[in-house]
Structure formats: C-alpha cells, structure tokens
Length: 107
Image (tube, rainbow, N blue to C red; front, side, top):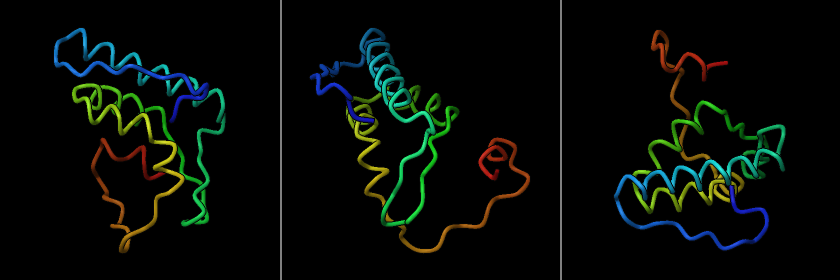
C-alpha cells in the first residue's frame, strides 16, 4: 500500500500517544488511497498465480498493531509491494476449526 501520489510521508518515530495516533492516521490514509485504486481489494501475485485478498478486518487490526512501532508502520506502507512479491514457503497449515476469531478467514 504505497503512497499513490509519490508524496513523501513523514512518519513520526516516537512512542507518545500523539505519535501512535499520527501513525494510525497515516496507515489509514494510505490504505484508503490504495482501496480507491484497487476496489476489488485484491493484489495479483505472479509467483502464486493468484490474487491475494486484503480484508477490511485485517487492515483494521493491522492499523492498531503496526502503529505502535515505527518499523512496523514502514512495513505496512510497503504492503502492496510485499503482497505482489510474496511466494509460498512450505505447505499451508490446515484451517483451524472451532476457533471463533479465525472463522471469517476460512470463507
């Protein structure tokens, strides 16, 4: 989810509440612009020969967690590139059944 307008984004490095809120806002804004450019919420990955879907639920959780750390925020800002370049290592684990917070992801 890189900046769509090639605008430089100054990401606060501190750990104050203001810095964390500013990083949440930056991540949210970049995601909003990414979503406008990718209304299907999917990124095609050539290595997997399939699309990777980005779910709103996962972005909401990611914003909360990534904003707590400067480097995590930088990683999320590169999510579009990461998804396009990802490749599978090993075999996927079977879907965990009966775990409520994972049930939305098995669809």
